[in-house]
Image 1 (cartoon, rainbow, N blue to C red):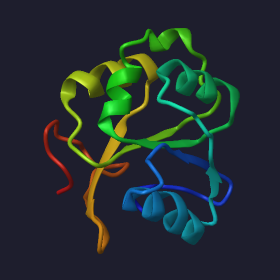
Image 2: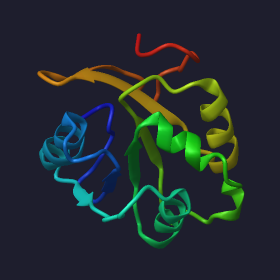
Image 3: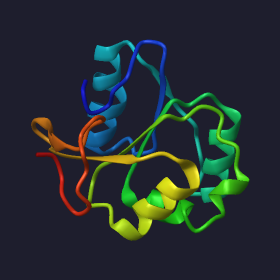
Image 4: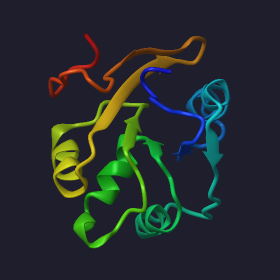
Length: 140
């Protein structure tokens, strides 16, 4: 609840593969517990421009993805895209390096909050809103 920082009126898009536990915990069960809407967008293949255009077209409040996706997105001039409503970005699956975090934050004004978990228990440690985030560290 604290890491995802969602409300019942929010819409969340988790771009994880449906075979990952990250999809189940952070896109189904976690959102259901919060009463949050799950955004699903079928993409036949990974398409960074398609993702950016989707964020401009639909009122996605929270975005969750692996660092690889954010890395691909920052390769584009993000200032050219007028995202509709995102206010919260999440990352899990592997650490996010500062070379991706800095341009994402600079160009979008959004911080990516990292989380770490395991298949059997879900989220274990995370950077959350209102925490001072130390680059290269996770949680307290």
